[in-house]
Image 1 (cartoon, rainbow, N blue to C red):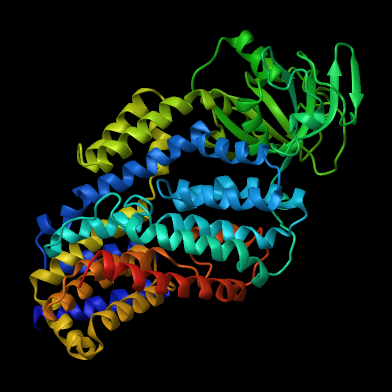
Image 2: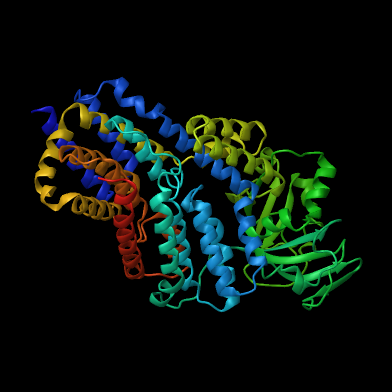
Length: 582
């Protein structure tokens, strides 16, 4: 059998597997790479070159740098700051959606959606707006922003990295902005005014999926809360925390009124989800006495773990308060908060531990590992902690990498790798967290498909396939060809990953354009924009994040996403030929 025939059979098989996801996409990609090696269509050097490519290194580095920004609380701080300055709820929600698009131009869409999700849901709840009217627009806004820069989505980077194999230059850092900005602006107008009319009115299930903890936090010297009333402090409005009691000296006031004035040294018993309590600790100038006492007792500091642990039958804690059970002395760990199914308004220090209570525990890793059988760890939340003291360094490194790489002062891969190395050296992130931040299935998929692109060209399969396609599409002219490639790419992104769809379409588009005598650039841009804008189904990771909390149905995405996809299609067809002539 001819190599071209074999490769086309493999191509069709991979396409079916990508679309059906009978196997994970990275497993399919590895299987494809293995077949190319075993059948002698690629040498080992050609097959494995993708794993050491600039594209793969840049992707891995950007995953880590995004996690550094999240750990520093930078993105969350932006959202909270906007919410705090709220004058008009609808106006602020629209400003948040615009901010989401701007942030996602430089960071992961999924991470941006995850960080802004509780902020936007909280704003909607306080404004009396059904969460279903704002959460889908949040996900779509993050996707729209990804088309503005080459690092906006991993798909953009994948396309840029695959272009040299076809004899084309990589995408410029801001090259996509010529079409990405108009698409984002028109898309945001659609999300502001039309999408809410098409969406159902359903309340969020976000709070139901978050564990509500009770924590004692003491107002430290210099805290911005000192001297403010509870109403003015924004603890509930901006930070999602409910103050259920305040201890001042020997007195405890339960259910304090909104006009209660907070003073330095007050201990606030607050109720809220883990993320809100941890964010409040880093931004509000409040401290956990339990943490401070543990460090004074053990002298332990530095890298610590944060875990959730459930109290099991037979625990020596049962029936006692944490102080009576001498928790710090017994385990060498501190309890930051406690979750219990039935709500109560006691202070944490007065609560007697029961079976099934979940403790939010912080301390050295080796001590967490020695908790024993009566305190079972449910999960490690260490990377949920944020520390705004790291924010200036995190912003400087990320911004430096973007500026140096974006303006071509150094290769983007070099700038990103150096920024990661400095982040590790400055302990902005641990090596374990850095490795965990990398989306390895995406890395494997990209590296394998880059190798497939090499085989596609070297065997002559690309020439055969594009010759057949060009014969069918030639009568359409350049505008018709661009429209057809855009539509096919959008269709492929629904069942398969955006990166896979782009890598499948790219060699076909370039080969067809060259055969018909057109400049391949406008078709490359069209495929990139089409692959990055997946709105019709909830299969995009950003959409999956809001699917449950917004209580959406599959058809909700079809109804709202189809209109946004059509707008993207029209704007792209109007802009692309003017910036990148055929």
